[in-house]
Length: 84
Image (cartoon, rainbow, N blue to C red; front, side, top):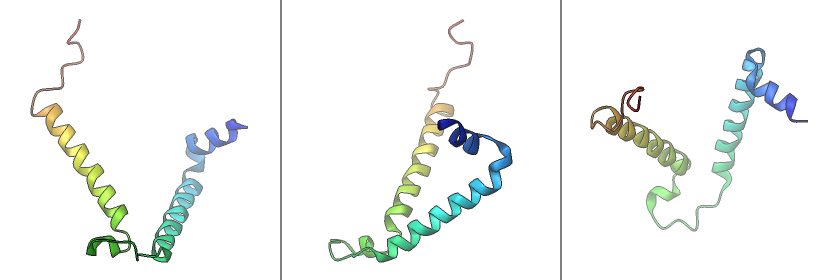
């Protein structure tokens, strides 16, 4: 039962349908975000459609850049053969 799912997400021949599926899901999420009631929002930016997605995306990008900086520039990353 899991083999077709793994094959769909792992094989290169399904790249185009997989990309279309992801775009369809993304479109449906964006449309659903416009249908949500914003009466419970306390702040102005919480009333903007897509704010949560943009905030989450920005937070993830910031987390990646900070971790790259700490690893490469601050010296937390070690060479591959450090423990040899």
